[in-house]
Image 1 (cartoon, rainbow, N blue to C red):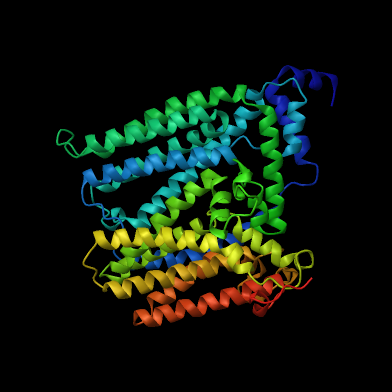
Image 2: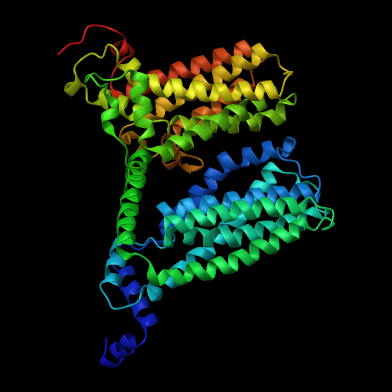
Length: 515
């Protein structure tokens, strides 16, 4: 580099930023053409294996959320917009658009450049990509869940596309806002989004708009995106660089775990720290409380996860019951799948008992050779919390939906079998340790190497078991047959989970402890 070029770089902050990124790109870690081609190949393969069957199932069944009028579309658009803002804010708190490679951020922070010069351009580019991805995701969800695309000549179709474009513009700036602003400002934005959605939904049902409610929602989304985006981009220059450096380091470590190991190791980095009085685990006389009390206290020490678990389990039990009570079997299948997935997600948020059981099984030399009451001690809280919460929501939904088309006994049996299946899948997932080396061996087929597909299925094996199990139960001719199928799948999950820890089933049976 000559003196003139060095002077030019020092005089132009934009050129200096490009020079730093160019130097970093030639360090040897740059993505090659072969890497991009393999990513495209894997995406196409996963789409063909998983995406095409879902699209075919959605096209052959009735719409899960029918949109028959502009008023219904307005209410749905308000709900989708509020959920998109909340989800983007929450994602930004953990992994926002300003997260960089730790080396690049360290180099930038060591210069006299303003954060607006090296973070502003990156933020704008990533927000553009996020906007396009959000637009595609919203349109895909509308195609799979609603009937907007069933009639191409309908007047609701352009309104729905316009609403999707508005959500695609607002969600990315909310993503940046969630990372760059404080918790108090994020709470205020979430409340404002909820209030605005409620007001727009009420206005959309009035007769004064004449069916133009979706256009009003689109205009509100566009104005909010412009105002919020301008404010969020201005806050880039005042971002806390120390907090951003910690978030970037944690993100880089999580990426390393996700690519070379298991996802639960990566997710462990984002687990909230327990808060609250730990002495509540003991009674006043110094003795430990019961198994349920210990699990409840540990769950309440992470109140955010406990609240998310309660909401997810209650929603899952209600939706699962609606799917089982649906007279149309094809339309009830998406309800059952969604309800089972929600219960599966909530079962992992009720506490840390699953991880405690895995640690005690995999660290057997430390805790002894046999564990007489280990299942009762560790699984009492999660099993009880999942069963009671999902069962209560199911009972309330059944009472509101009464009389049930399939009969109360059959519905109760199927709900119980579905919850048992979910618990078995959760056990299988939580007993996972390190990535087996044999999964990295090539699997040569006419479609190419499927080893990456095996790794993908292994990473999400619990979710795959839930989806496959619900579909198998749905194909059974009677409720007892479906319950037996769920029991068989659960037994296989328990056996496979214990094999992952290296212990047979008889090691968990009650018996005398050995030193």
